[in-house]
Image (cartoon, rainbow, N blue to C red; front, side, top):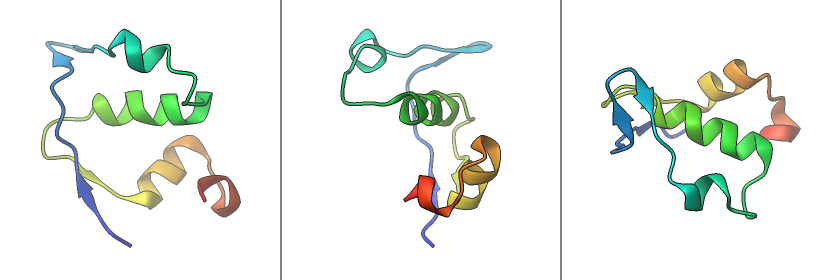
Length: 65
């Protein structure tokens, strides 16, 4: 599987800010929004792995797909 590196501009000292357009989007379900916020809160250079997301959120194979 492919690894990705997190690059975000939403971080401040000790918090992450999510733009209203993202938080209020009707295109994102609760799970997707949760993953997005979690990813945005990771430090710069954090390597994203599918297995890490699945373990963190308890997603099985079907839910992930």
